[in-house]
View (tube, rainbow, N blue to C red):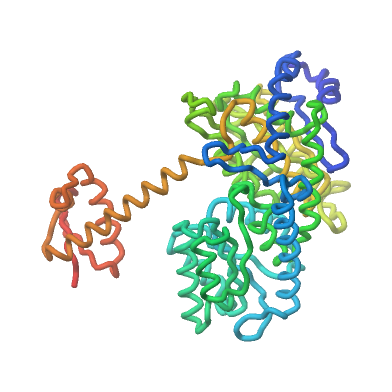
Length: 530
């Protein structure tokens, strides 16, 4: 470990300072050896070449035969053809125009009142990115308040609808699904539609679709004459869609300066396209991920942003990084079981949560701190002589950083000037680029998600089995155990799942299934209640 007296020299040697985007990256407390970057340079330059080809329209997502173009969203001139460039530019203009008409009341709710709320209905990348942006940039001057239905949990849906209350009559619903067939989003839409109808409202007069051209959702929105439709493209993955209509429309409606957010992402893309590794923060970050984990995901990435507004950043990064990097096979078909686990909360809350383990427990992680220089927009309040609340936050950050380092725990620090729309764009683009470069370094496809698709198929199998169970019980009209039902269905291997299905249904009285008590759980029987 470098001695404390050498840290200043190491800090100056390895600091990546990018004043043009208001960001710096300090890796002085990562214990990589001398010569590490020289050793990595050929692989990094190869990753740069892959990224260059990706931006030119090369089929980077080979498994799905798709281009990967989220970088074009910030700079349409990079698009591989004029059709895509015009689609991006037209969509961004349409977002601004539609938002202006909502805000000035030209497009109003069914009652004639202005819309004051947004209900965003989506899952995964169609919710995590917009949620992060909405929370990070919320203010008292927001034009509309954002609410989210991001799961298929009935109780959670009820809670959001209850929070809207009578305000549902002034709520614009954004339904976000590329395919239009994502079950969680479809269920959220149907639940929301029922809530509007209970309030005596026509859902179509409050609804907007963000979806793929010709999708099930696109056809539904067209046939029911929803207020508007915005496109999603197959060359933009959900986890990198926050600078498309998926993230830009709800942000604009909330009152966030999306032009500035796009500018921050674009300028960060310019900086992280540099071929000089030492001045490229995304390349340095990807290299540190490789160093810390041996290129094998052997350590976790702990995000510790010292700013309340960045609370949801780690949740957003969990999908961006873990869905991109967590792969069973590499691009050559070899089994590699790659991954990079991400978790985090915020400072200084974490100091009262899990920093104790980080400092003294198992050393299976490395930390990325985020330091925000500006404490607040308003004037400083002193809580002690010459000391503000922000000074204490700074002290806790530096103290935690030092305490971890003293005990051999590694960390790097991102420093930004402030949290605003521009900087949020910078952070989004920085981590998107780092993910792409790291994926090249470890030879995996960062742009598909076969494990997620497998989970969806498995869920569909469970739903199909439930339908078969219910059909059988309606036919038999008698008490049957799960084992008996599975046998009658010719699926004895599914007995546990049959039992789980029946137990779930019986716990919800209006589903029409009654469970009898028994001394042993396997002897419990079920029947349809007429």
